[in-house]
Image 1 (cartoon, rainbow, N blue to C red):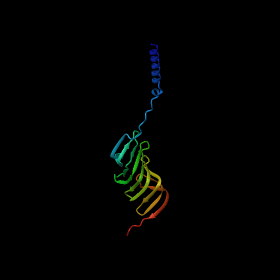
Image 2: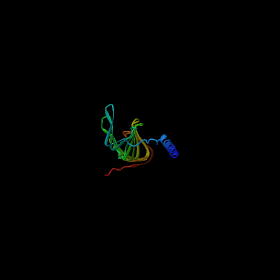
Image 3: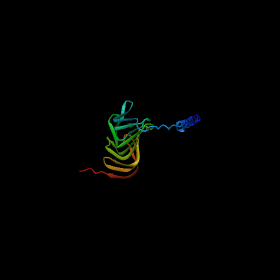
Image 4: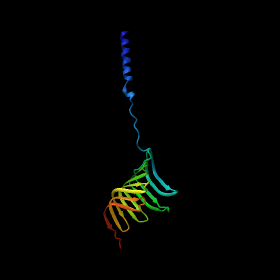
Length: 180
C-alpha cells in the first residue's frame, strides 16, 4: 500500500510541475499582419474639386492596406484636367505607391510626364506628387523634351499640371532641329 501511496504522491508532483509551465503563463505574442487587405484589378480613382474632375488615376493592380495606403505594383497612369475639363497633362510609371497620411503619390521606374498643351515631355526614374501642395518633384536625373530643345539636370520642381517647371541643377541643354 505504501508503494501505491508514494506512486500517487510522485504522480501528483509531476502533474503540478507540468501544469505550472511558464509557457502557459506567457503565450507567444500575436503576429500582426501588415500586408494588403484588399487587391483590386483594373482600378480607376477620380479626384474632383467643386464638382470638377481634377485627376484620374488608373492602374492594372492595386493593393490597399489597413492604414489607407496603396501600392500599384504594375504601375499607374494619371490624367490631369484643367478647369475646362480638358486633359492638361499625363503621368505614367512602372510602379507607384500612395501615402494616405500625406495624401501623396510616389512613382518609380520609367516615369514619363507629358504636358499636352505645351507639347513637353519629362522623363525620370522617380517622382513625388504632393496632392495637397499640387506639386511634383524629384531629386533624380530628369530630361525634358520641349518643342525646340532638350533640357537635362538633377532635381525638378513643378506644379502638378507640369506647366511651370524648374530643373534644380541643370547639366545641359540641346537644340532640337526639325527635319526638313
